[in-house]
Image (cartoon, rainbow, N blue to C red; front, side, top):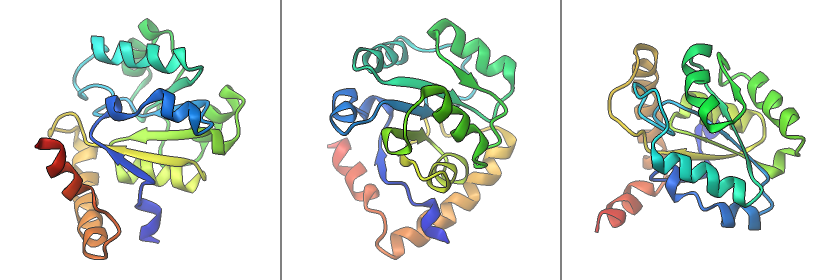
Length: 178
């Protein structure tokens, strides 16, 4: 059961996800979370770095869809200037949003990745949908009310995974700082 919370990969940020590498692996689509994955949860607009990341994905022929549990106003305000498709009120980890994004992109599951900062929504949902998952470090340490509850549960799951030798990225993260 707890294996469903284990991401296939873990990176520091979306900027550590190389579009050329994804393309070489046959990836044609990215389903990404918004808050604390692309920008801080309380930042309304994309940063220049995120705009460039979307452009790099597009240059490799990789389509990006934002799937967020946040409301339509929040997700639309962020997504429209990027000219990217979005799914608001996604109700992750339920499969509906992942299936909708896959159908929109007209790709197979093995041509997709799910990127997000939460085990309880992004990783669990992606794994349940049978899609490769990439966990990123949350951009900021603060969260909205509901996410705070998820983070407490996540910490326990991560502690168990580390104890069982299922994750190693804490050691890798120390190497990133050097």
